[in-house]
Image 1 (cartoon, each protein chain N blue to C red):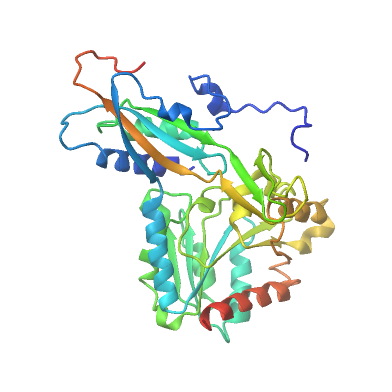
Image 2: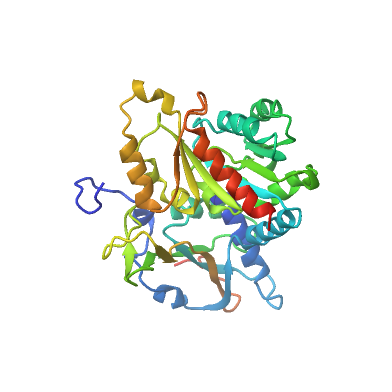
Length: 125
Length: 260
């Protein structure tokens, strides 16, 4: 539901990361890491990004989303496992004392910009 | 609610729409694959780091003033405001309180809370784009309207929503999620992040239990499945049944902060 705000943050961070020495550059792809426990729906984020990026250097860029699984470690028995459903107790020893190792990510990893100014229209695909 | 043994097919739209044959990603190999003809510029930043920095500033501000901040979250209509009105009435004689209340529109909740005599700041997020949650910068602005020297407990009544507020740190000391017995017992399973990030849960409207087929045990079991050690307070904001343990928990939390 707050994907528009997140899309705008992504555009802000990505725009600020474009090197100043390449004017009128086109960003081809934005690489993101989003944990499965983050309250973000990738398809909504793409939809919002497409709208919010119009008339910015990010217009037309592809959002590449790497979904990170929720990985937990039991504090009692040190077992590590991927949480795939709404159960946060240790499958090995049933302890509720766990650390969430991954799955809350909402990171922008990198952007990819066109290597050289090209004349062809369809930069995508 | 066993995962994996169900017969119901789960359709995940975002995966179907995704044009790449992207299976469950265990690593980040695809991110490393740069499109041909492009140059990759590494960034590696948290998208919400602006909010996180602002939340850290808020937390410092509140700590400097010896203010304990409680972030109250829930679905719409769970009875947060009534619960808050009763809570303020009970603790105000000996704890100095203030309230920030967030809604998309109207000042109805602020009007109800102002009866307590506590300073109340209403945030209407339509001024901030109709947001579905309170973000740290909004709290900073609202806190500017409160004399924090005379506050020991600041309660933030977040916008009724079990999804987005869970993602936004506002600089609070504790988070409470309120749900009511007129909702489904499986709400914790449907909104795991919310129940995971909170420090306590309140099961409200227990005065209605005789009229409902609500399974309290099942609801508590579901909460514990998401957050095994979380205290769960079963109470009725209307009749004030079960209010004692909730108030004791809150008082203890405030004491721990202001005596530091």
